[in-house]
Length: 407
Image (cartoon, rainbow, N blue to C red; front, side):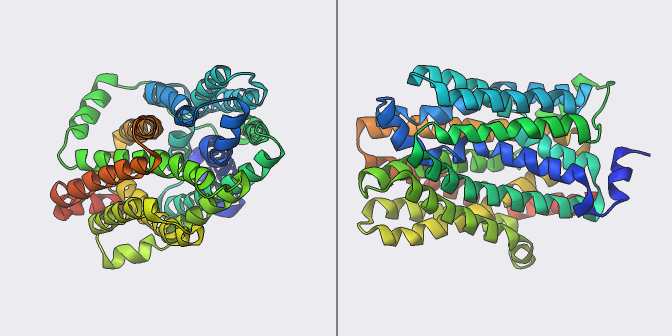
């Protein structure tokens, strides 16, 4: 009996494989969200300039840009465990080592190693769901995993912020949780993935032709700009604004960031109902307009309580935007090459995640803190233009139909 058939022979929530996938997902989102509230404290403790602190995100994400596609191919060739177990152990060891860094440069080295450990996690957790489940079980598992991801991104900032009050290095100890996850993957996870026989030239040919499609490029542009705004304008410089202008400590910064994540979780949970009334393209366009409004508003807020509005709106925009883009990309890709295709999407996301803090850091250093939000608003404006002029709703109707058939 295949691993997929074995998994489907038991109730979904009683399948240990699903909980291991949840552990991988929670590890994948830990690397940034758990330490972001500690950025101001880390900068003070290690005597790092504000414009350089965003390098903790950049150095973490760059390895994923380079090696994720390679790791995806290795996982197809040799099986998921061969890639996942060393990745999780490296993530845990390197992340914990950051707590013992004696200089910022040393910490950046450990963050790069941790990023290597993280590189495969965000792609392979979804791949495992595809390996182990099909039909309605797969759709249900995807929904559960999305909820777990949102809960993680909601709680990690609050937990990391609280730990940072005790000392800047305490949030890095959360990385130790990756080690038992790796042990469970080794011992309990069903063996999945191909053992060989890949036609590499055929995969590259089909993926390459898909990547240059006029239907796919606007979606990649959208996800790239979204991560520029998320990790540059929101996670990095909105955090700095709360510290510099409103004198908030790491705990309250974490609480504020968690608020938008809870809103993202709620909006994502309503996506099925929303798509019954609105096309995914229209939801993406709505989110792009919301991003533009948010980053134009933030520099003008003078009372911290008024941030409730942009924080809630940002969370809602995230909840309708990212799942809509990923649904369209997943539906468009041929299932025979979907893993390789989506690994490229992961690289696009990582590129935006890495460049956002760096580019907006240059704006901060050269102009002002307010200018970083106007720069994020420019990215939002480009997203608006792309979504209205280069995304056509009828392009994706066939993709929607194919996705339903796959489910």
